[in-house]
Length: 354
Image (cartoon, rainbow, N blue to C red; front, top):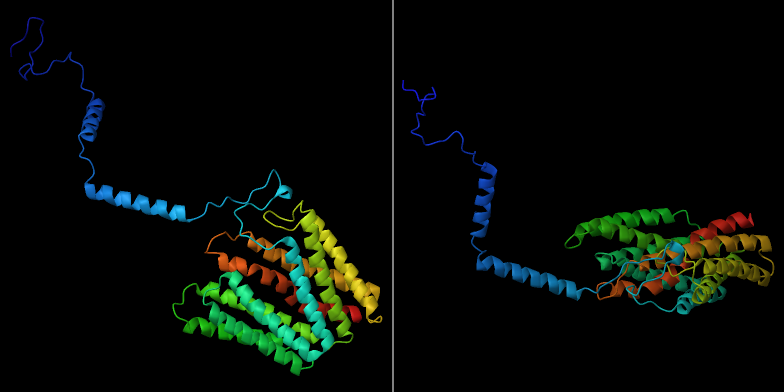
């Protein structure tokens, strides 16, 4: 084997490689190849560009159709919360207080007129409340739900009147309404949003059947005085509270609410005063202490129902989508506090008078 002058063997690859030459940077070569391929990549086809342009135009059109609604905000604490301009337009605070007071006055006048005028007034309240509640909730299959709830309300009224004020069978009315509601879900067309529709129907059934307890209050001892005191308390609480909110709203009860702590306190005091005043005018059928206790229970219930509707209104947005729900807010806020009074007045009256 030949050797070189320095004693080493010659290369067998014909001198193609030199051991002293630097190694090739593989990563740099791959990077350069990638950059070159990216630079020489063909542009996207015209069809893909057209599809992207159409999709972008559709998204822009949808966004322009929806109103820009800023979220509810507050400065530093919930006490400084204010309703933002994006909320749906509602009736003035004074009107929001006058309507439930007027409804309570009509019920009180019907109660003075006798059993049948009161029954007619309660039926009207139940029908209006069912329609308003289902509209506020945006219930699916609202027509069938309204039929079920109104039928349950009428059945509850008949049971209370025929049983001389007994309410132990009202649970059976609600149970039967549940069965009918399930059948309604089985036969209605589409059957979409079944759980939501069933829940909304049962809520309308419960509040309408609860209003039937107003008829049962008259059949208790001192029932006329109890009913008049309860209605006067609810009217005084809501009216005084809303008038105070018109003058002094902050601090508000919760973020997004239109009810404030000053209005809450003034409303409770006004409700207590109205209950004691009615007890004094009804020839002493209710003692001042019993009237004050009844007034406190009724005032708290009325404020709670009113606040629930008020906070629910904060979730609505202006526009045609929520226009029907926003229009039903005021009837719901005016009638719901009166409907929930029935069971509470019946229970509180039995405890107070006993």
